[in-house]
Length: 63
Image (cartoon, rainbow, N blue to C red; front, side):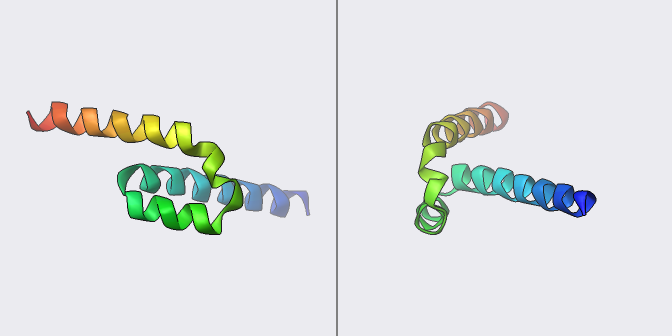
């Protein structure tokens, strides 16, 4: 039973990490996630930083 719980926690962690990454890429998805995940607004500073970082990285690669 402990292994199953550990697996579920790992899946939830990776799903939230993917959601944060996708939210940093697209503002519309960010709004949807904020509507459906109550605590998602707590991650706003992280999402803002990740969005700026990805934008700067993209600019550095494409220039």
